[in-house]
Length: 156
Image (cartoon, rainbow, N blue to C red; front, side, top):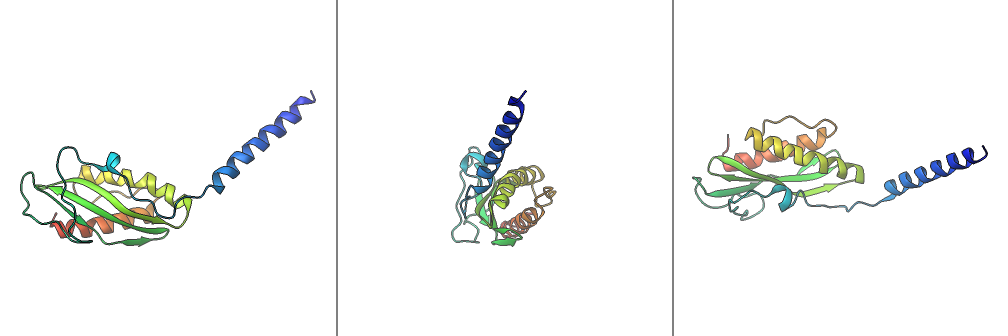
């Protein structure tokens, strides 16, 4: 019977140490957006931007890949920009080359929201997507940068 308080104390201490360890972890101040494994298009060669914010050279047509980088958008907890790749008339890839957040929690929220936003853009083939609940500021900055990149590519 005297073991119960000891086990309760040990369990509480272990849980506290686990939570404290989680909160004391330092996140990198700048982490690039989803990499090739999460954002690469399959089979279509993507032309890189000639300069930040510029579209790649070449006419739009079947099989021709063009890309554009949207402007850096500041949101409540950081900065991001969006790069769009278009092949023919279809959006084939959306990535976030720059993601800087002010704190680890914002980094985690953005890392969860960005793949969901990417999926919505590829499905809708436009910037008319729903924001992600709990990531309102990230969603708004993402859509603003995305729309500017789509405007450069003259995507409707």
